[in-house]
Amino acid sequence: MRVQILPATLCIALALAGVVKREAQFHDGQPIDGKGKGAPILGGTDPEVDRNNPSNLGEQSTDSGTVPNLKWRFSDSKTRIFNGGWVREQVDNDLPQSHDIAAAQQHLKKGAIRELHWHRVAEWGFVYAGRVRVSAVDENGKYQVDELGYGDIWYFPKGQAHTLQGLDDESEYLLAFDDGDFDRTGTTFNIDDWIAKTPKSILAKNFGVPEAVFDKIPKTNPYILNSTVSTRKVTGGNGELTGNSSYVYHTFDHPSEPVPGGGGVFYKIDSTNFPVAKTIAATFVILEPKGLRELHWHPTAEEWLYFHEGTARATVFTGNGNSRTFDFHAGDTAIFPDNSGHYIENTSEDKNLTWIEIYKSDRVADISLSQWLALTPADVAAAVLNIPIEVVEDIKKEKQVLIKGN
Image 1 (spheres, one colour):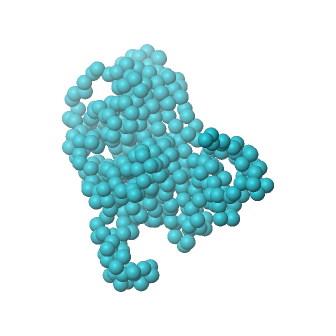
Image 2 (cartoon, helix red, strand yellow):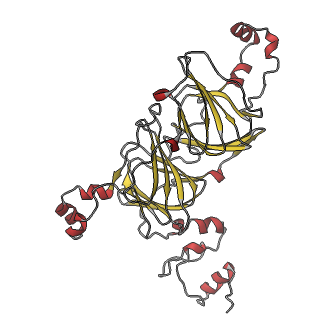
Image 3 (cartoon, rainbow, N blue to C red):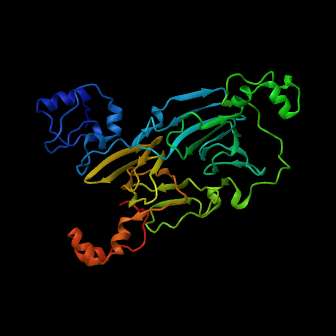
């Protein structure tokens, strides 16, 4: 039997005429719950965005009160393109609720260089495509040159000199900074910009060379420029930055965290295992289909998130009866306010969900709702929630972290 799919406009017209039974239509991009609430959208809208964000259409009946927007899509960011690649940012102008963290996606072609620079804030990076070489120097004349691939991380403390170079045909990474207002004047200092603004006579005196050496200094700051892959080695100075002083963490060279819930893989990267990372703590998470990042909150900082692969849903509880549910897709970022209760659910039936969490903190810390209840006198917890005491007594006493889907 052939099934006929009615156009959306015809469905709306038939619904208005009472011909089509009103069932829940959130995933069709309509705010209709099938129980008598809602009606079709007749004005201007973006149907694809509506279909991808059913929670914005009222799908979650438990949402209540007023919670500001906590989501930003990198696809809505302005992309700056260069000869050697591109960059697009998410700062507090884009996501005003993100006070602690700004972020960017950055792309380098093979040999392309993100020019030598430093920041007034700390920089954290995660490679998710290709390979890059990082080079850095600290205030003691120690240096580090290292090659990073998928999953590898760098952290440059405030004010540390560094640069990046692409090693594969196309390489890309996530950047995070411990200040939401990253674009304000006096945050980033590029070497070409500085040299171009310094008198040649001073440059000549400083480096002990003729002024003519600087005749071809770029007049416009290049930011990202084409070049060839470096073949030179660095020696001298006061030695290499290694061990606890290293600016690089090779994530998959280390074991993941235990996940009693059995629903995925959880890596923690903070000052407890990456000592130099004093102001940015992070997790790298893979959640299995239909799995759940258990209900919890973070006592030390806001939680900033980047969704790399898959689809997700999260309800954020901000206290005083206020909660709001958001739908997430690859390339989305989010901010969960300091101490807000939340979960993250993988909404896919067959694909993993991969995301990164960032905190402006020296460590990753969370409090599990289940563990809290399990370690509270059972009769007290049961009385407060008005549930059988046996239910409380059966709650596991250790964090489940990532729970398998049903």
